[in-house]
Image (cartoon, rainbow, N blue to C red; front, side):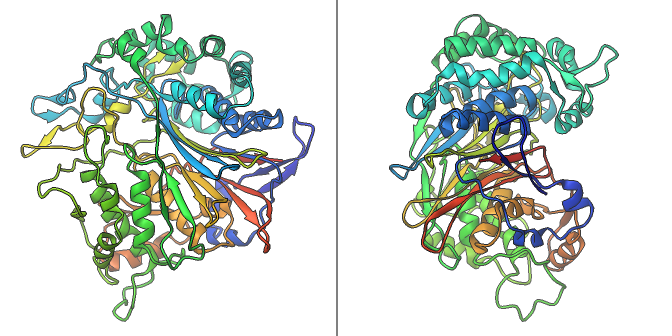
Length: 596
């Protein structure tokens, strides 16, 4: 649903949002939405997972702020209204496009393991402790990186004063806000959060019942923390009383962690070289380049592999059992098989490059990918895929370890009046992180993104815990450019390892159908594989798709999908002149895209 209206602002606002009740429950064929005209923002746009956050970002842009300024304001508001997904106690990856130079930069604010972390810290005897116990612990808390990173990016690309960016979040935390639907649902299914006294007092009533949707909630402790950060900068989080409170919370029983004040003071964000590759030949936007974050996230590598392994794509159901005469794999089948292959490689080869040599060029080598593509056949599934042997890699590589899903994380996309772009995925890992609260914000459980097992059959796991190491991620904030280096689109998602499949599928839609709107690419039905069961999102075409996949040997599970994609697409006329921007926000969450 697209609504034009004048809200609390002085100028008309474009708001783009499809309601899940309309798009899925009512049975509308989602791919048909690609033909609905999308309203264009002519000046600037924000797409985020919450309307209050998107509106805060838009207000910053209207005040003359940059895309980075708006991203900081959006993150701070999300810390208030979507605390289960991200916040100042977490980390993230931010991609920035500078329109003037047509250059992309990559900023790594990923959490790190403290100096006292040990490879065996998640073991109970010789086996991994139960995953829920690892999550809800001090052991799982990494040194947060979001605020240090945002401060560094602001120094480079900010226009407004740092302290001004905190005003929208402080106002919401002090004056109150209606509990959003997704937060209310998360609280209703979250028993462990009650064990933290501060979180219990904030999110639950005196009788133990969770705060309900629409109920006005205030967070004065977070408002005080935000005021401190606004006046003193990120140092307020990494030194002094607030840092000491973080350490005390991490070291609290049960299952205390080893983080110290020295770990917090030592944290540094990293500016990395972006990982950019041209789109594989055969797409309608051949010549486009996809840019994302390289390791320690596995997301960009895996998505680029999937794009190369799926030569054509549409959302047609997978068809019946008769595929003997097919000359090429059906797109849904090929997408699932490509996901298997990409995850097999990801789990074996990708980790923090400061600790493990990651064969990025080998994993994206044309000859290597030709061999991987040849493994995808029309009429049968690979089943469990094995990691490949990219050129230049050792004969005895590190071993893989199991993937654990999570339900946290959030993504935003922003473009400012100068055409600068931010694509930013930010997280505290699981929903509500480690369930430990300090200063009105939740601490991450990012260290459970490491393998809980340090070795398998005596061979080291690449993504094992090590002091100072950044855990492997699936976050995939992308920026796409045309052959001349102009901005095409920005996209990313929440969803743990499912981020990879979701971003890949939406990107395939955008690349293979230039008429597809960003909203339709995001709202369309999901199909993915993490090298196991093929997941098909429940909806009108799910049974037909599942039948075709089962006929090809897939084990299929029809599931509801939590989503979390947000994106912005630039539109150019036939002469190459920019017409404006269209936004998309995932209807499976509370998101909205707004712009002028």
